[in-house]
Amino acid sequence: MKRFKSSTLFFVLGSVVVYAAIQVLISLGILNSFWSTILRLAGVMAIVSLGLNLIYGFNGQFSLGQFGFYAIGAYTAADITYRWTQLHNTLGLTVILVAGLLVGAAILLVSRVVGKMRGLDTLSAFALYLAGVLVAVLVAVQLGTLASTPVTALLTSLPENIALTVVYIFAVLLGGLVAAEISFLFGLPIFTLGSDYFGIATLGFTIIIKVLLDNSDTMFGFEEMKGARGMIGIPKITTWFWVFFFLFITVVVIRNLLNSSYGRAIVSIREDETAATAMGINVAYYKNITFVIGSMFAGLAGGLYAHINGFLHPNTFSFIKSFDPLIIVVFGGLGSVTGTVAASFGWALVLEGVLRLVLPEGFETWRFVVYPVLLLVMMLLKPQGLFGNFEIPFIRAVMPPLKKKDQAAGTTSPKEAA
Image 1 (cartoon, rainbow, N blue to C red):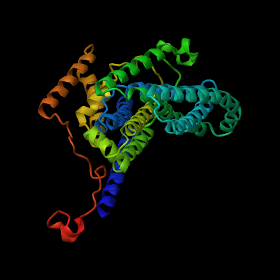
Image 2: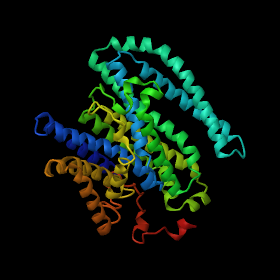
Image 3: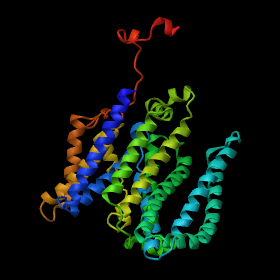
Image 4: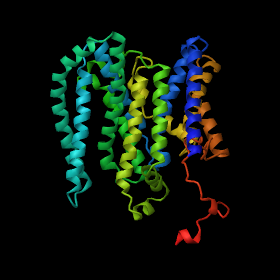
């Protein structure tokens, strides 16, 4: 217990020191806007990669769909804040908020119905979930539209900066919620596929999302997104504080999840799916919940990213870019939270920062050659990743201490075994 408390204390104090040091450097102008943006992008990429590490590194599901959910979160959050700052209404906020709540309720309700139906195949269950979600969305559009006027009046009565902050926080959180609910629906039919086919299916999902975003203005009527031209007019609200805050929460949530009974079940599926099934673990359920949580973090990160530069373009979320978090996870170490965070900041500082400044003008794209070469060398010299299985004490599972009479032998006494 003392070890647990001290590791937590050191983690919190260390986090505060890191945040404060960087914030002071930004405030004094020692870190200019370029490096400030790089650090914020690094923190956002760390959240995306932590979500993927949960799916791939800890649960063993090879996924290339992380950037698809990243895009969903980004455009969802951007649409909410755009409507507030540019159109002066909360229609996006109220509709998406009500839709998120009603869709969640519909999923829970349908899950109870499906649980009582024996012998129901996967596609039939998916059809029931989809029907319930569609009904919830239609109702949410009506209710959200009615609630928009009073909510707009309420927020207008607040000071402008406070109202914008409230809308921004809801936008980021709803970006994660929408990504999580879409990932649940998407995961239902594809979890019957094997590991390689699962990866191909998730890659196809990322491509589909990118194409839909290219045509979001014509197909879905979201004229503010401007389709393939890119969305502008998004308020630049994401500061170093918000990135660090959400990264801190992400690390704590993943740490607590992995050290729970849910986390042990998640890791056991990665180690041996057959053995996990034999031990009574519902493999499909834990795969789905892991996929949903990992995708939620991607959507959350997307909401943060949308408000860094104030501009979104579908090409940012192309399938080529979807390999970035996968490379980061492999580089830092599969199943290593510490390694993922360190590799994310290394990725941003080196690939997007140093190499952009060091390489001659016109050779910026060569950084995409240097990075894979470094990764190849690392894989040859240390295939388990830079950090391997290393974790800081706060992340590591807290093992109960041995009793004094058993410490010498390091085993359980025969009496206790009996």
